[in-house]
Length: 309
Image 1: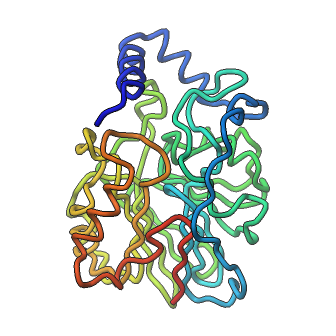
Image 2 (image 1 turned 135 degrees about the vertical axis):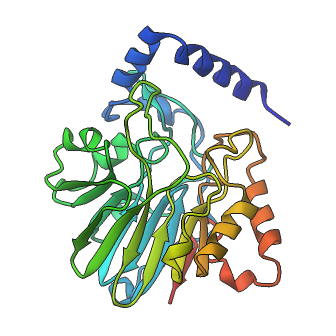
């Protein structure tokens, strides 16, 4: 059942999209860094995840992944630690002075920023608030290199990061012993519906020991058939009702994993923020049902879950 508060929020945002003045204001508010938002924390503390990751021996893993929550995944690939789309805030959205205008987390991150191991690289798939959270990014060392989709750099540069690279679809870069390539997906990149030129994409991460595909956000497509085989596919399975044109259903995400012959699949983009109308527990339930007897293929299906190869 749809909640009245969801309908009200959507009516407000739909109205704002039709107002040039509101779009300009939203673009400015969308650059907030969350230095002082006490009202975000006045409600009850966020529930802790059932699983608490064990980082013992983290540096020794050839391939490992921890689902921190939503699209934030801690990866160990090629002897380096990578963090995808870091979002650790209680709320995401526009900066409204003492609070954030947007959805609240349902579950706390599996690890806080202070509990993370040393991060060697941050990946940013696109500029949406649930993937590029400036209040979270502000708390990281500005010496950490960042690789982002094309047209996103200005939202990162002004916070002081020293090494930011943008990748358009098909472009590649080397990082240490890894090869990272931006891949085309079916989504959109505007942060506030005013900056429609921003890019978006997935990242193929290749090392001597492993091949990982971080899918970002995407509707169903058949663009990953040429990357097979993949050791670990990280794919979104939520926010499809009514946004099927921008987000894959669980069954479609599994089909995309099959396209790339993914040996293991980490399903993300569910159970963290309410961004659409399907029940919070529906995406992962449908994903498990779709996988059927091949359940060992699913890894880290709950926040805090960990996969080690």
